[in-house]
Image (cartoon, rainbow over all chains, first blue to last red):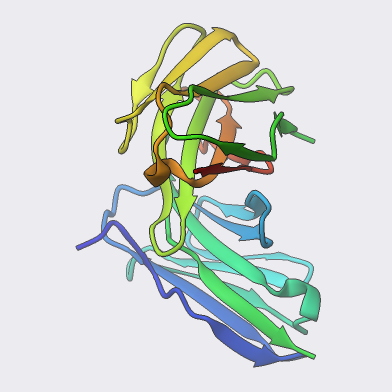
Amino acid sequence: QKEVEQDPGPLSVPEGAIVSLNCTYSNSAFQYFMWYRQYSRKGPELLMYTYSSGNKEDGRFTAQVDKSSKYISLFIRDSQPSDSATYLCAIGWGDKIIFGKGTRLHILP
Amino acid sequence: DVKVTQSSRYLVKRTGEKVFLECVQDMDHENMFWYRQDPGLGLRLIYFSYDVKMKEKGDIPEGYSVSREKKERFSLILESASTNQTSMYLCASSLGQTTPGNTIYFGEGSWLTVV
């Protein structure tokens, strides 16, 4: 079983919809959880970062962690065409970080 | 804001050439990393460094070497470039080992084509 699994997509949704992006992980030792956004031909940029189970909100973005199920999600409300990008989850413990392969998201105007 | 700068964004090199990819970070981070990113394979760690003059192999170090002579600078070297090293290379940095939650910050990427 891979340490971090993420559906590659592509995921296409109409503008204004709520987007749900997900990752599962296998190692319960993971302590912190991140989401990165990567535009085409650019480096990944950090969107959200959290330690604990539960929800963390930042504007239109909500990161959700369920440690009991080893499942993390990123929700995007009121999605915009500018949200079209690849979203990578990243999960770590200590100084070790594992990245998902990313989900390609297309927001249709 | 953390800034990780990769000096070359787009390079075209010939097979067998020696290639240097340079990276500088401005936040006094202890850790620096080199990844390559390929479609369907995601991010793969090539080398990382926890301190000046220290280096550790990542998942795919073959064909690469690194140099870290100064804390802010981490160079990736392709000793003899091959076509299968055509890829996007990403430099990254993070705070020291003892800091919980070492969030990684990435540069813009260097697109290398080997012909």
